[in-house]
Image 1 (tube, rainbow, N blue to C red):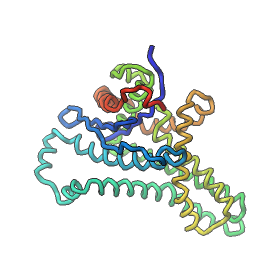
Image 2 (image 1 turned 45 degrees about the vertical axis):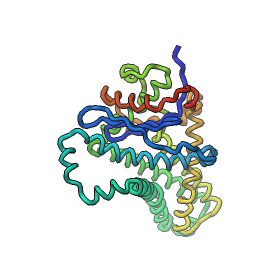
Image 3 (image 1 turned 60 degrees about the vertical axis):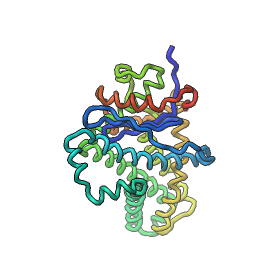
Image 4 (image 1 turned 90 degrees about the vertical axis):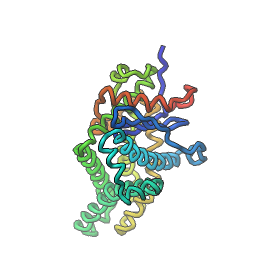
Length: 322
């Protein structure tokens, strides 16, 4: 009889590949230009610090580490996927000074890319919605905007704007050339993990039957972050009252790690109790958003997902229990 469980193994779609993060190993599998599957272990720190185990703190640390690791893997996969093609062989012969510099300082480039990604996200989902709300408050006048009930309305409006911008971002991302392939790999990642959790052998046929929607997904995490931010920012707005625009923006930046920490714990709880009716309702928005960020994969893509998954499954079946 198949053993059903929830696993801590998670993944990320890459360029023509998938990265899987297990309890002891992280691995990426990429389909090369010549059709073969390349598998590489991604080096991670073997030691887990005290803070990485601390509730409400571990979420921020895990998010940053996965952002850096994921950015590095994404850049690596883009290069690996081109290997074996005639164009790639020609490109090797002519490398620009910038390409050579990036190769020599890869760690620096990955860190800068991660910081840039966070900066863009903060600007789009934190700074811009708040700026629009501040403009609206100025147009209303001090007498109306200073009232507590209006502060609540403005904070909720800010949160709604943040949600709208996120949906627009996902919608526009889907229009980018080549992103459909990434969404198919994302779907394969989910289906492979679901097959493993169901206790079935990791075969193409078994994985095809599994759902591409998974409650413990990064997309679901982002939705929880946005939802929790509405609550936290509204409460803070009531407590501190009306402040200057720069103070409001700085407070939002300072509270980001706190919000991420709470969101991670909620995701863990909902994922662990996904049969509970209340938790099912809480997970529905994240599952719905995955209709935008996943696609049904074909067999070659599923084969890549299997290769990445098999490389990180622990010998002891209890080591990756959620």
